[in-house]
Image 1 (tube, rainbow, N blue to C red):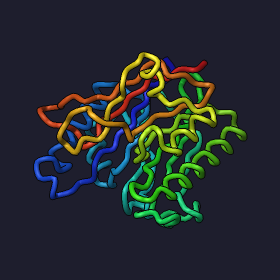
Image 2: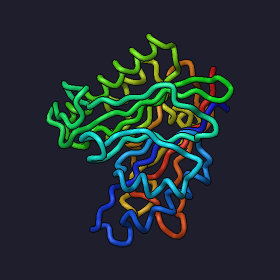
Image 3: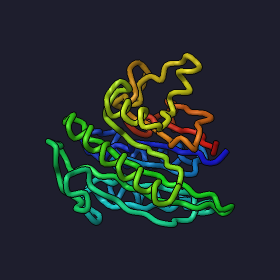
Image 4: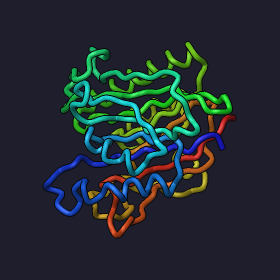
Length: 258
């Protein structure tokens, strides 16, 4: 196995969630990550205080990222990585807008500023790859499609310059038949869920609003470039300490080089 990857929308710290608000879920989120022993986690909806809350619970991980409004402001699409195995070679971020170098910029009828965080990592054994992590808009179809077009352009540019394999994680806020997904597949990126379809198994939903269940379609995804392959994928629908760690299920994929 090359790496174990997770995408996980943590759900903002919202007081109206009452018993499901962040302070009651923090330990459960850390337990999910520890139980799966993942190398890399792309998170969505993490605020700065939420990330720092996780630091003492996950001392084996470091993270990179900024808030979508710049600095510590707004939601993060941070990337966590296991420090004992991976070193950061390069990293960056861009807004999903017509001013990509300006965090906080909004375009294409987006409901909020949206962004993508990326990191190039190198293992102790010399293996290198890049991870892009994003959270697409939940309302504007134009923002979803043009945001992913920008991400695809940036991934292609990095691959052309470095030759690195690429993993893309995120909450895309679209179902599998959407142009965001089919466009990635047509460009040669493998949807981790494709191995479930080979096995004739349904993916089910990945968002459940703290109610559980699996009826529906996914909106959280892991994609890999053609020089990587997916060996296993799962949606973790378990309760931790009697509660769901988030209103989204974490998705975990085992990835190797071809």
